[in-house]
Image 1 (cartoon, helix red, strand yellow):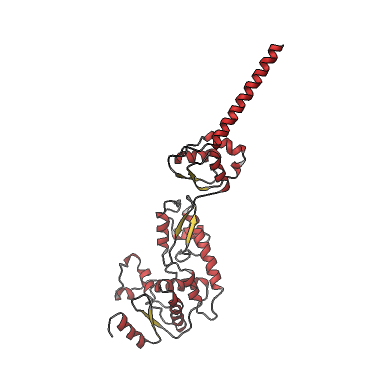
Image 2 (tube, one colour):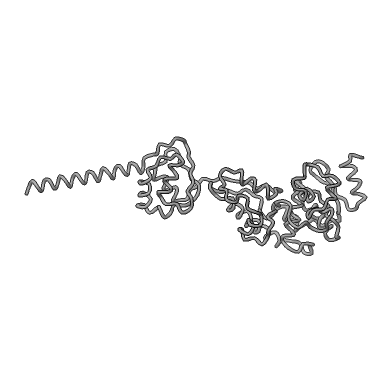
Length: 335
């Protein structure tokens, strides 16, 4: 009996030692820095990923983490329910526990993409396609279908996306970024429309957006935005043609090669404000907040014309005779 008892104690001790050794080994693995091939390695966690799928994504990116061990660590710590989809990075000195904790906290890497004031929607799409961290999902989708996916009542996307810098995590889709820009434009446009002057010849926020896009393209000189807006508002009130070159250029599309000829001014398109009265049917570019405010808070004056001085500013006039003199001076070079 004594021998059996001794054998039993020895067996229990061995099991205990083995368990302790296993626990120590597991703890060592959990806390031991991973042997990374670079100082920083980025990886993406798709939505709905299991802990094992996350570990597989890390391995695919070059992060040598034990997949089974990582999956058990996530489940035992109950962090498997906290892992957030997005873009992450492993850094030199990170252990499996450090990585898991980062995933559970949603400590993601970030990128940014800037949509510039005055850009067309085609340029927005080009910037999205060119960004290496944007997940491409739209392909050759039509403009009308894109707007339908965004739940927009408009079929033409031009001008409906706010020009700004957007911060995002790698793997964010092109549609998600456009949705953010669309929603922000709706928000800003609503705020600006609420600040409009009474009696403007603009019936809807969309018309204000159209006018703002023209202002955005007509002047890069900030202090003149409201004065330029005043010229267009005066013309709209009088029923005059807006006769603004940026609308002609927009209507020309790919035919525009850097110059507008007389024939271009006379060639009718839906956006040619030399051949059609009133505002064009859509914006011609993305308007920023300053241009939007100028459209709804134009300077009150009697000017009906303006011409570029060639230095980024404009010369304004109240009648055609003055305007012709300004054209002769600043465009034709006659004193």
